[in-house]
Length: 179
Image 1: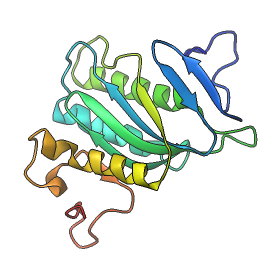
Image 2 (image 1 turned 30 degrees about the vertical axis):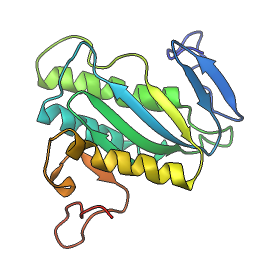
Image 3 (image 1 turned 90 degrees about the horizontal axis):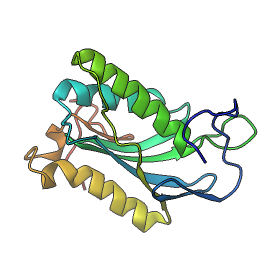
Image 4 (image 1 turned 45 degrees about the vertical axis):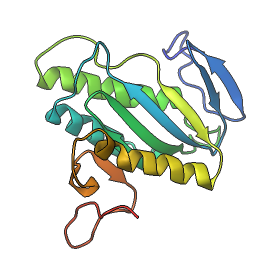
């Protein structure tokens, strides 16, 4: 399967379990939750403004193409926990289409803001089907703790580029301390 639109077929909805390969194997299954990681190209570091763009881009399609469960935008990579939504009655949005939307738009905006040209993201992404509730909690904890682990903040709730669905303090509008 190609990540580009060739022959006018575009991205096909996911109707049943499938495996395809670029450099890495990719498994897709309708109604699954995925843990996805994608990295910047050539050690490109995302400045704060660029991380804003990535977070806003990921949030933009939530509720339309996918249900965004959690997200963290780090200086050189992004982790996302999401569940693709139905694409009409034909199946679910494929990961290739979801990631193309995020990476293409954010790269164009980042290059525009920084007045630069060039590749922002590596072509390939790492994705994994989350198999059960324990793994879901493990991946969620990984996302939440990533800024702490990398020494970017002293408290999780201070990291601006972290999103967890339904996890904002109603009074402050900030992330609460994780359980």
